Image 1 (cartoon, rainbow, N blue to C red):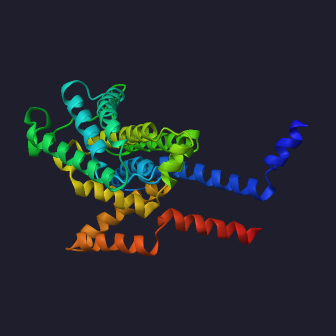
Image 2: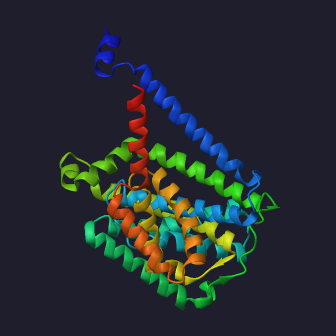
Image 3: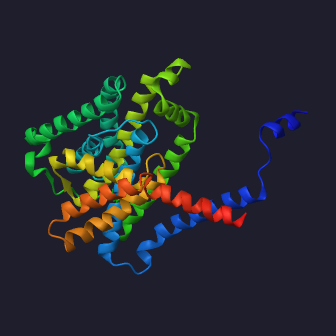
Length: 334
């Protein structure tokens, strides 16, 4: 009797849907395997370094997607989490230890404390107010980075951050550091997909659709907004930690408004609310950015124009194009 009721509510998946799910999982596993094997496929060191940077920016873009894509909170100051993580990990590596598994948790703790304190405030606001307040936070951190000379190094920033180690093994730039970044990226992506598909993730999407309706059915909107704000900063801090070790330092300019604008544009270009879209978008934009600098003197204008055209003609981003193509392929097979 119970099986009959369940079958009526949730009909058994068809052979076509099972084949589609299997194909999607196979493509995902193949992509992850290719990602891990990339340095060993004959790519030169510069390409590996460029892809490493793209993967780090991908983690950063996914962290913003949690706010903008899933919760509907546009942040104009998302460089804060990245910069604070970079400074904390870099300072810790210089004065305590460069062991990656110690420096990363140290950065996460510092970022978590500040994110919780600020989250209590930003959890009460939405829309334009949220965007402006997050922008103000990043600019305050910028001024602190410039003025707090003993810790931040002022405008010179942190210089000479030591090479990170993993259980005593030095992660030199190249294959070893790339693999660490790739593994962390995969773990972060899987964790965020799990979060997005959880009841918490569904609640965030309800808040994005209408905060008033979400509150009316008993959802604690402020608490959920505060929680996702903290989570997004923690993920951004992972990217910041990886970035400071890759670059060997950082400067207060990491907090500047154009950095936040850059990651917001990348996230929109990839496709809001998809996680995979911003990740792929960050990788593509990293390589396009390198090409634009070498080909055009006014590369900022060309780069900005390309972003504007992409948003106008492809509002759903790369992910939207991929989803439509995927659906058409499977419709033609059925």
